[in-house]
Amino acid sequence: MKHTRTSHRCIFGIFCCLILAASSASAQEILHVYPAPGDSVLLQDLIEHGFEWQAPEGAQKFRLYIIGGDIPPNFKVDVETTTYTQIFEQYSFWFKEGQTYTWTIAVLDASNNPTLFSDGAVFQIISDVSLIPTPTPLAQPTPSGDIDGSAFVDHQDMFILSSFWMKTDGSMPAGDLNQDSIINQNDLLVFHDRFGKPGDPPAPVSPIGKPRSLNYSPHAQVTISETPTFEIQWSAPAYPQAGGFVYDILIIRPDGYKIESKGIASTSYKPFKSIITLTGLYSVYLQARLDGVGSSDIVSGQFEIVLFRQAQATPTPVPQTADISGDDEISALDAAVFAKTYNTYKGHVSFNSLADLQTDERIDRNDLLLFQSYYAKRERNLAPPTWISADIPVIVNGIPQEYNSVELITPYELQLGQTDPKLGLAESYYARLTFSAVPGAIDYYITVHYEKRERNLDFFTGGQTTFTEKLIPMGHDEVIAIEVQAAGEGLQLGEKSEALRVIIPPN
Image (cartoon, rainbow, N blue to C red; front, top):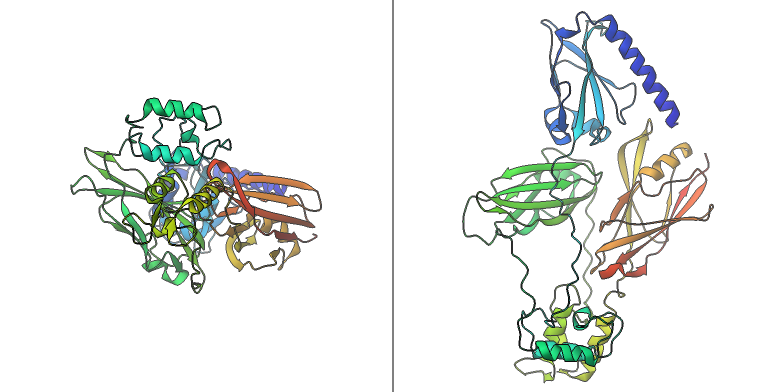
């Protein structure tokens, strides 16, 4: 199939060259305005500006040819103006960053026959500077003894150190002061020398605070019909106390394309001017800037476009956990909070009901034992994700034109090639699968098993709960079983999800 497409593209290229050669004497009467020959343009600029040319006097109808990248070899479109600005709605997914394209204009007569061709103008799609934060490797400095992060080595740190006495499982690296993989008397001697001294210095603070209260109106999950009114809202940074902030925003669509706007003076942004039919999760990255001061750290979030909004389930009571600080993770901060409320009871000034893990209205050794158990298991206690939906592409000429969303329910099974078995293979390659997020997860690990070929494929999603073009189908008449696990700190894996079986029919 790939060889056939290449052949068609070559034939079309030869055809264009012959026509261009025949018209070379008069081709200069058509001028490429944008993109000009040799231009490097952003995809978003091409979407907003479209193609523009200067035509000879009296020309009223034109035919636009574009070749390159994934564009079908016979692509052409007829227009009656000297611009073509419908790229976004119809054909934007054909244009890829880093690829080169050639566009040509023909003047049509009253019978829609080409009478004059322009030269081919070559341009390239480039990528802009991204707002997506690049993760930096975590430094592993020698522990100072400041286990609770209070910037001072004191008795609170001593309590936490004693709670992990003789531990060798790495559950409290900040307490292993001599870094010999065990917390024992040698660490106590080091702690004794450092007691009463300053701890780790605080992390450097950005000169501008992050934009606050990132939210979405009317909801973080909107239907297709609501997209023209959809608005992203936020509050100005808390510091410095000055006006004049501007904001840069980047939105990554479910298909990977970018919507980007820079220098926004308001604290809201409407990304869509019309109804958008591309369903799925959209990732948002937002940064504040102030002249003469600099840029803030990047704040991120997500919203979702769906066909129909699902009814919200009634929340169930949250069981008692060791997340005493309420920051959705179990860490040294929770150990410090627990230490402050240890040996208290209901009515005591320092009593904290969240630390009463036994729920007996007092915090004693029994709660300490429970806290130690929860802390040791904090990375292995991640719940299994559940499958939510699959977006199945509608394939036309080997290219997905749109997607149909299918809700996934147990037992999870996805039958492809329903309209045409020959398209099952292409559908599996472009299918977009979505699963639920797991609290405490920093990434997700996918296991793909090809049942009839006894082969496996494994990968991380980079923290995303949606993935596509990852199944790499090996042929027709195949069953692909997919499982997902949440990964916590240190990429320690949680429980496996139920298997989703993707069935590719025989050709």
